[in-house]
Image (cartoon, rainbow, N blue to C red; front, side):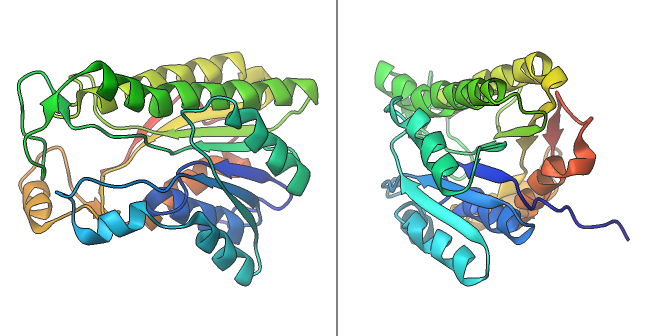
Amino acid sequence: MPAQPDLTGHVALVSGANHGIGAATARLLAVHGAAVLLTYLRTEASAQYPARYQDSRRADGHQVAAGIVADGGQARAVEADLLDVSVIPRLFAEAEQAFGPVDILINNATGHCAHDSFAARRAVGRKSPDTLTAATFDQTFGVDARAGALMIAEFARRHLERQATWGRIIGLTSGGPMGFPGELSYGAAKAALENYTMAASVELGRLGVTANMIYPPVTDTGWVTDDVREFVSHSDDHIHVARPEDVAGAILLLCAPAASMITGNIVRMR
């Protein structure tokens, strides 16, 4: 049986970690020895989502960190709006002060996740979205693309300054080559993050940094309804409705020391 990854001595920064995939990833990395700084922002989900998803978006990340510490791990939570670019270097500085330099970056945070469209197209499990506007673009790209890119840039700057030789960058994506009809800005922003991450895999590869993207299956972070499950059961593009822990497991594999030559990939889970 393969040995479990040992991340003792490594420090992870996980964004969007007060619920769902981010929280599950923070917990799993801590179980395997990493110290974790969780970033999050409590937000209101649209009333069309199930109540449990609305509750999870409002969750306090300090509770996730406290749970990790209670289980013997190392964690700290910081509430931060990634639309404010000045917070990004402060997050790395806080992680470094508490635990040491960040050498694992998980770009998981999602912004407004606007349901915007060119033709009021219905998204899976959701009511007809609004027309794409500058506001839906700015809010979604500000977190999913710009903040993700700046997180990579800050990671790289500090890596170079300390002449480090080991690092992991992992982003979460969605959509595809035909975009994300019904959630145009979300899909396009994730495509931008993919591009930044692939470029990082080239530019930082000889410095010991791997950079990959995870494309999760439909993942029940609280928003999945019976209608969504029915859709998945008849879809040729989907096989599973995953748990956040399933996606966290894939992220852990890419963080493992043994994954030192796995880079520049978009790993699709189905």
